[in-house]
Length: 587
Image (tube, rainbow, N blue to C red; front, side, top):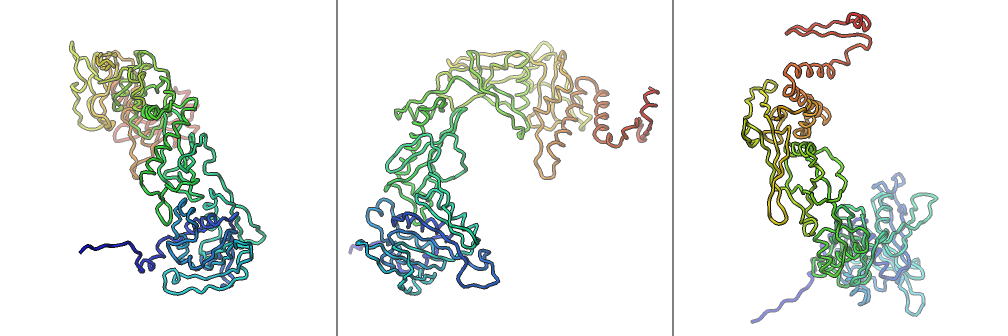
């Protein structure tokens, strides 16, 4: 025997109606304002007042005594009070339900708060219709009690609806929630804070959702607004549903060294847009939403096509061309290459864009800081640096970019007698303990070989003479750094110390570590000591280190009008004080 089944709503679902909404002010204002708009209201009024009866010693709006919030409108009113508790049913006409997918659940946002509804329906013949009111508590929403509807001569006149509910939030929080709900709402919203004496109702500020757009176009009941360099945050709303804003993931287009383009959508009459009911805080992932995102991207492309300097990435340029949209390709400019630093916190401004010449070379590989610093010094000394540019994958596909030569390999060679050896094979000195380690021997000469791949698939090599390089591992401690300096190099200790810092200084961000400045100062002292030992002598390195230690640790002890002589003969330290004049005369 064949069985059939049919969808139905079990009566126990009503027992969970108070969990449909979070019952926040944002939920309540969003739903009540939407209902006012659908009812044909010309404006909405939100009032905040102290309760009519309450403890005299409590301050309204502090969370101890609830405030009364009233949302009233001059719309068509509600003819049948039963619709308030008939979830999934509403009194809207079929056309509106089709356009907006009105679900009939919005009033449930008040299910956790005691509320009073007063309404007077608009009569088709213009005659006055009696008003009514009903007080509702959570038990009424849960179907555990019947609500009594009473006549109400004070219902909105000549027609409209008024909803009052209790709010334990403070008055400023209520106003903030009302401002958020009204910001992109299509009707004027008045706010009246009766808890403050002498204040009058004022219209809350509103702004068009697409305000500031540089390009706008319609698509299937939506209006797209395209923005250039619009500042927004992560997951900011990008769709406006009659004042209710949500995020649907509309695209952004980042250009090459140019503007960032984004798009927002405003709902006009879009029945194909499906939002997750009942709260409408997200969109249903369906084919329409996919088409919507694609259409929004094309709207951005059309805006870019009219821009003076669009600079599209090749992928965006090709997508636009395939859609029949012609966008100007970016000019042949790149950022000059600069060597990386070991200190990741050293944020440098990027190099300014420069024209790409016929002899340009793209750094298609990213060397570690020691190797990068070595290459940069050699390139500068040989006039090769202006030819080096940063790689930019976004430009791959453009003919001018694909035709630039690229680095395929970087090899550092060291002269050992009459032969050249790879720097990795250069003998490393044994190290006994920090400060007493042997120094690497100084080679006769060094050079850097850049292997370059050309667009035609050929390879060639550029040989750059070098006077220094770093052996050993990258990201090492200063005690493990192995600087090699050619015998005929004119490199000075302070220059080598600066290169050591750029290549190896990587400060610790551990909570127990010293500050960045202190770590840098200590590193600089160790680097200068190492550089002085290598380039001058151990004695000179010792002398400079002692002088630096005195400047750092002892200078503040020395009186401004005295001269101090310190003599150290382990384990004794002798200190002699003298007047500056007598010390100068004795000299």
